[in-house]
Amino acid sequence: MSRPFIGLTADFVDGYARLRRTYLDVVEAAGGIPIILPPKHELRREMLDRMDGIILTGGDDIDVSQFGIALHAKAQCMASERQASEFALLRELDARPEIPVLGICLGMQMMGVHRGAVLIQHLADVLPHADRHGNDAIHDVESDASIALGSGAVRSWHHQALADAKGFEIVSRSDDGVIEGILDSNRRFYLGVQWHPERTETVATGLDVVRLLVTASR
Image (cartoon, rainbow, N blue to C red; front, side, top):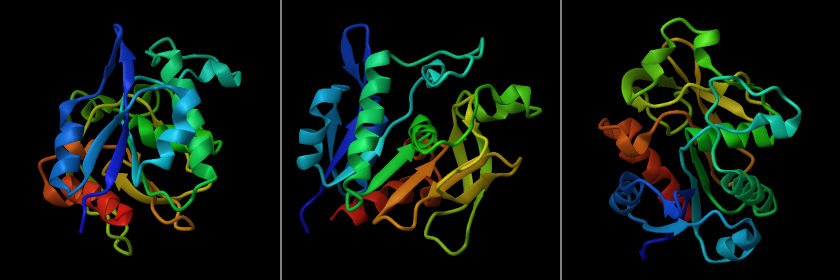
């Protein structure tokens, strides 16, 4: 079968549209064609017309002050253009439940916040040894045996997390209880993972996660 086009959200940094190469490589390895989507909110609808699947990639923090919530002192917010573009994309995807979506790290958090989930702005405030979730540290996750998402070692780089999963099923948690996977089973494929499968060496929690998205996009 032909390779599906997988759109990956990018950031604007120092005048460049930027995305780590590991995302491109893992989509190719999973059988898809990676397409970088710049954060242009006014073009999101036309971008979706041409994509078979979407990956909401990782990045800096959500600026929750836009929702009337005090911003944590440790927050390092993404570019405002990217935030507006990501939420515009999520709104467009709500109208197209047939398009498969995978949210990674920040991407999962945005999926949750878009539906009203509460964001923990700094894990160290509520979780001892929260640093084990940062700097590409490795820890274990356990996924619901009823779904195809794997369990095992993963790489993480985040200091924020979802406190709940409003509108989703929680399908994976880390060994210290952090929500690591959310799923909307009412849509064709709408999955978020808190870890970074594009940098995880364990196949079941790395490449296979992206393969699920690519397979759903065929």
